[in-house]
Amino acid sequence: MKWNAADLADMSGRSVIVTGANSGIGREAASRFSLAGASVTLAVRDVTKGEVAAASMIGQVSVRALDLTDLRSVHAFVEGTSGSIDILVANAGVMAVPEQRTSDGFEMQIGTNHLGHFALANLLLPLVRDRIIVVSSELHRRGHIDLNDLNWQRRRYRAWDAYAQSKLANLLFVTELDRRLRTVGSPVRAIAVHPGYASTSLQSHTGRAALTAAMNLGNRLLAQSVSMGALPTLYAASVDVPGASYVGPSGVLHLRGYPSLGVTSQRARDAATASSLWTMSEQLVGVAWPFD
Image (cartoon, rainbow, N blue to C red):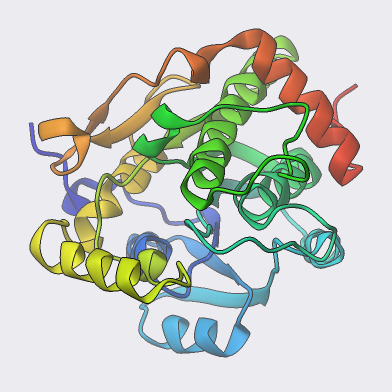
């Protein structure tokens, strides 16, 4: 069965937060959520761009500032959040960027893609009623978690390896988060998704002109559309799937096609690494599991 956006359940009365929703997959998913009746918050670093995105959407859409590279911004966002949240979509991310640091000194990719979302999700968790959806990537399969140098302070920096590590961290976060939720008897589910190879602006910030040009060409010739890339997120928000599921395209090499349940790498399901990464993440961001 080809599940598509028309199959998205009625979301009237439900509240959704989508990070990085001013462009690409986040924007497409947010637009579909609002069209289905949800009250949607675009949590974005650039509020002006967020307002432009919101103006193109139908329904209840608000825009709020959130910079995942700055823990002060994460805390401010949480402090300004009230009421329940049905679905939190941890979508924002950077890919293969030149070596740089967040405001808190983290390597940019692990800081944005994992640590910022780790802090946000744990701080918001007491308000979440249904699902936390984390956007990862098939490139997690080449990733390795170096718990001795998570922030690339001693290793020679390699942009793609840093990206793969951050995407593997996303999945280990979902693995441990869902385990913890089950342990405390919470009805909330943690679900991972990936968009396959989708044509977005994510590939345009490598800092290397030749690579960016090649990736832009790949977007035009090989990638599926943004609307197709957003389907796994919509599917995970709408279909009754188990916690710790991994949803992505069902086509060749899982790069294209309609969403279905998939299988992560063995490393992404390693419980010991997931637990150790969780502990380290708590220490780095200063945010603990809220249900102890």
